[in-house]
Amino acid sequence: MPTGDAQETRRRLVEAAYSEFAAHGIAGARVDRVAATAGVNKALIYFHFGNKEGLFTAVFEQIVNQTLAEAPMDAADLPGYAGRLFDAGQAHPDALRLATWHRLERAADHAPLQAVLEANQSKIDAIAKAQAAGRVTTSYTPAEILALVLTIANMWTVMTPEMHLAGPTDSTTRRALVVTAVATLVNP
Amino acid sequence: MPTGDAQETRRRLVEAAYSEFAAHGIAGARVDRVAATAGVNKALIYFHFGNKEGLFTAVFEQIVNQTLAEAPMDAADLPGYAGRLFDAGQAHPDALRLATWHRLERAADHAPLQAVLEANQSKIDAIAKAQAAGRVTTSYTPAEILALVLTIANMWTVMTPEMHLAGPTDSTTRRALVVTAVATLVNP
Image (spheres, rainbow over the protein chains, first blue to last red):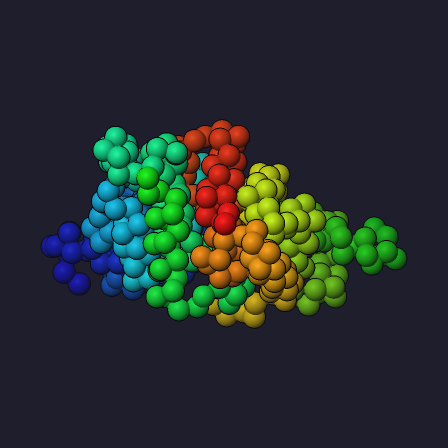
């Protein structure tokens, strides 16, 4: 394989790692498989990312950036934002699996990810402005509103398989429920 | 160890398996460790539960029964029910980790658990009755209401570690948010 293009190597490793981590989690992921799938020498994983943890962080930061690009927040229209987050979750089910592995396997003993902290803070600031402008209820703090919106937008992805069978099963009805529930909670 | 008391052996195995699965998930759990922690011969795991999957099912059904006992549903007071679910989640954080492993590792290729299906259906029936009695909004179907209540009651357990830092950090404020949000959504 061509070793000249470091950026291309990095891109292929992150792409291969995305699937590997989504399927097996962090402890279960094998860097050998990632290297083989990417068609890259395993040593390059350590060169580019330091270790398996560093590789996971690179994958996770890509997801954060992808979600920010696909579902930009409009604090004056949080129900619409929730709908876009729902759509992004439908389009990339693996992204939410990765977020869950992040929570299950890393939350206890790892530093929070800077990219996620910054993305959250800029959303919280925007919600505070929308509250000041009378566009969003002031019954909750800006952080509470963001927590409620994220929770409801992703509600179907964290549901037990058994509730999936009981609830509405088509994505149009599920999306409508997300948008309506968020509107009920956050509209002034 | 005494082998006469099969029920006691079973109880010790389920207790040991609870911690093992919570920490490592299904793929990562080792029956050898479960047997050692329980002080029981590994062969008895296969005798009582068939395989590792069967052991997980036994653990999960115990959690379902424990949650039903600690947080009984009152369809006429869903905000109160959400508060009790929040309390149960605080008291047994491992239970929600196990529910997440169940979703991540089993949803794709396993039959839904009968105990969970039945628990959900009886709740949905109770919500339908409360709607008919004018105690719960009819803006959503009974299954949608149950989905919203469960989602919000457990919202802090599925949040990213980064949102945990941004949102309210004390459990009194978190519980109040859960109860208020459910009331806003489901009261008629």
